[in-house]
Length: 117
Length: 111
Image: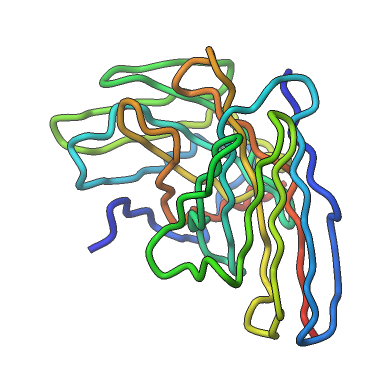
């Protein structure tokens, strides 16, 4: 089946630094990728929708300048948390859908744990 | 009011029990309904999907959608300790690829 890979799975960074998380679709071309955020014992909250070759669409309340999303190719999207602070510590998950897939064909990555110290 | 409501649990059942997990929603535009299983510190894994109303069965899992009541269910038969996880319902409308998730129900199957 389709696989979506995220890297790194865990990252610890110092407050004020930036960290990049990669999301790759391994065996299909992902025209659309989504970035979610999940706090402990809470559900996934959509942060932004990323279409290949165009600017991401951010959900209300998500800071565009803080969470930079790039979808430069059909197999790679990146999320960069800029000037990270402890409150940005969370589980970040990407998902991907592909052109020609059925409406239900959305695959999730394994997630990336970010801890800001 | 949240678009999708789901009891967070935890729900604890003995091994072999039938488990019923449910979600209600308010957006009548939702057409696709999914159930995901999420183990601790892992990404969600798609279990079942259903389009519009009806039932769908896959092994020990049965998904039901009642659009008139805006209510969906996931039944797990002969539950196993390995089924212990958080179960998330998710749904979306036609033409929209992003999912709206419920808060998840934590299930514990006791051996």
